[in-house]
Amino acid sequence: MGDLFTLANLGTLLMLILLQAVLGFDNLLYISLESKRVEKSKQSYVRTLGIGIAIFLRIGLLFALYYLLQYFQEIFFSIDNSFFSMELNVHSLIIVFGGLFIMYTAIKEIWHMISFEEGEQTAEKKSSLGKVLFAIVFMNVIFSFDSILSAMALSDNLIIMSIAIVISGILMIVLADTVANFLQKNKMYEVLGLFVLFVVGIMLLLEGSHMAGVKIFGEEIHEMSKTTFYFIIFILVVIDIVQSKYQKKINATKKIEE
Image (cartoon, rainbow, N blue to C red; front, side, top):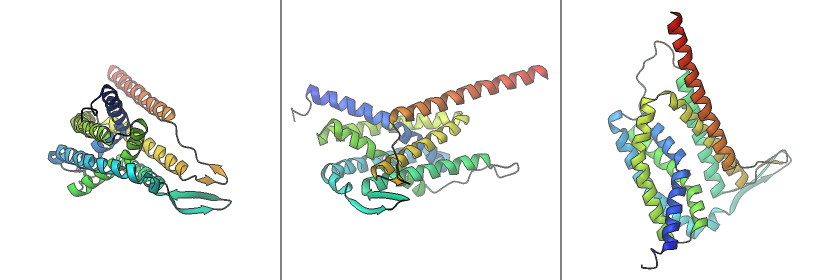
């Protein structure tokens, strides 16, 4: 046990926690937006419970990937013709499905925002606690794949990786209410958050397709680099800030003219 908490292992633990925090941002955003689908009095509870369950599932996934990774990479379905080809395995299938699910969720919520008509009932239709909880836990596991595989590249110590998962999970529980409250008070940022999730979905879809070696008309699908992803997010944030300030300027000009 004394060999566990060496200076090298503590340094690795810190790196793993930071890695989990960076990779967990989009997960936290999804949790905050999804939890709004239940009654307000239960939103904090469902976020905490969802992340708590996901922590245990992440640890289980860590052990599964550690010992069964080779089976996740085995091809179970392939197709090859002049129009479309791919070699599908469990890992790529989960990533592709997760990306499509996130894109569907983002598009559905964006459509709900822009299709609101005057006179429509203002009270949003709420989902059951179980349905939202399942979505949070399910997507938490989907998001876990990249973070766990990245952690395995940094360390082969299961205990250190498990501790990092638990600590990062606790941090997510602490920050979940803060992010949710910020979005609640700043409704306009929900649109930004949904488009960020949409881009995350595209990134996962491309990543899964690349893993499966998908080719369309002989052209290989390439994954989106993390640099490109963060650049897109940066541009979206800048556009949102500029648009917000410009709208305030327009409103101020109208008041002066009146």
